[in-house]
Length: 81
Image (cartoon, rainbow, N blue to C red; front, side):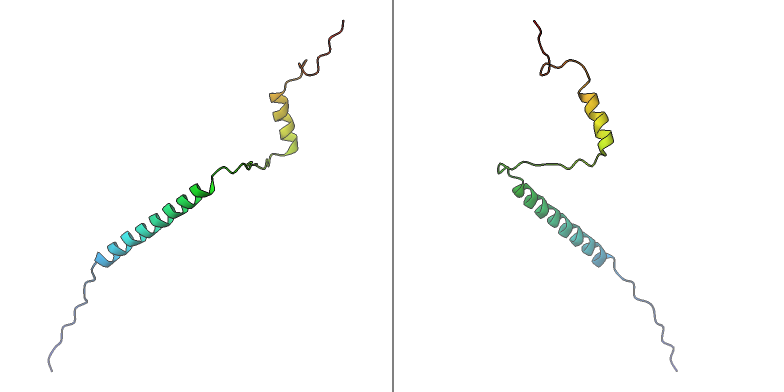
């Protein structure tokens, strides 16, 4: 009987490289499309943007006191005379 020598076939890396490049292009295209969509949706139509302050009320008091120190205010000064 004849001896048959079987060698494993070497696989090429080219399909993997092409696949990764294609995947990168698809991701880049999706990011660019999302950026264009976001840029189109940010046009100012006279609406105000409000942000929710998640700071606890106790800390907001301290912050307000730093911005508005106690003392005579122009709005509350009473002239006597």
